Image (cartoon, rainbow, N blue to C red; front, top):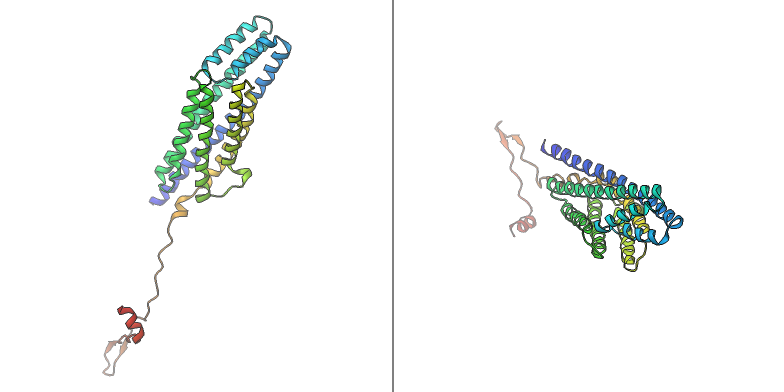
Length: 287
């Protein structure tokens, strides 16, 4: 009964990871949509109203730290009094939504990390699960820290965070290839995270020379969406208990047949004598 109970618990943990991954992919999709809406709103504000003022607002909104974000909101309220109240209102609303979804996404990734820790506690063969948990925590910690790092500190934190995210999905790919299935390149979460983080890091570097950051985030999040969407399905294929169960030991056939009872000449039942092995076989065994 114990292996059945263990398998059920393992399946429960995998179901939890699958559900959180699915929710994470939905939140990333919302991030992509909100980012596209913000780009359109910023473009309208730039071309319809004061280019100089809007440029200053945009430069605050493309940064992720709290100080610049609050400054961008303040500038938007000030600019709303200059003529584009409706547009400013939508920009503020969608910016706050984008900020809130970002925090919820970090919360989901932290929950996934805890589930991977439980996965290894339940099945000791999944030694990579604890590595996934640790690197997910590093990603969430650095991404959260970026909110409070002024100037270019948040850029460095974001670049490192997206780099370490690759380590988590690499270990997930190792578990998958050993105990589940080997996905193709188009379905491999590790490749999607690698592509998304590369784009995000490149656009983060370009921020040092004042290049628009939101398009890079959107393209990077598209790859992240596919990564978490694939994870929600692939996690269910992992079956280490069945894979690592050793085969039943084989019982070798006896070299000589067991003695059989026979009827002797006097009518009594006797046990037949076992014939002695050949000399060559005896000598080999005695060595």
